[in-house]
Image 1 (cartoon, rainbow, N blue to C red):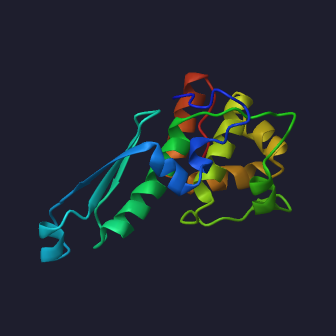
Image 2: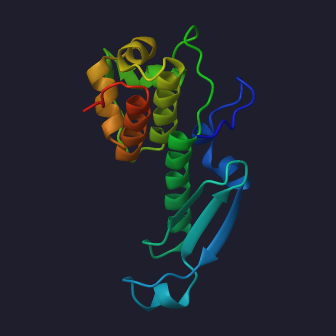
Length: 176
């Protein structure tokens, strides 16, 4: 895990506006083989992003245009950043306004394809890290139920797998 947020007032990299995040990336355009017709084999529509501050990479090549692949790669990069980078989370201050707006009556409402998802995922993982990966305490701090927090984490299987690996290393049971 990387700590790319040296200051508490900086947003998590997964929460940065995509156009601003792109400025912190090296962009490589390339061709990839596979389905998609001749355009895919003749034009550099695949996009690989490398986030310079962390070295985390993401790519997309399944779409027909470079612009669509760039958007997909940026979203994937934000997900990878949410999983890999731990930011600062203040238990005393509680959840962000973004989280509070998505959490009503103890339930978290967000589609995993929505632009807010990576930032919310990062906040949930940061909150868990701040309370030693205890989901009951993290849910309390975030203002949701424990089952809703675990259900939310299941939307991104890699995030849940990493959390469970950390919990096992601490001698705790895995979350199902």
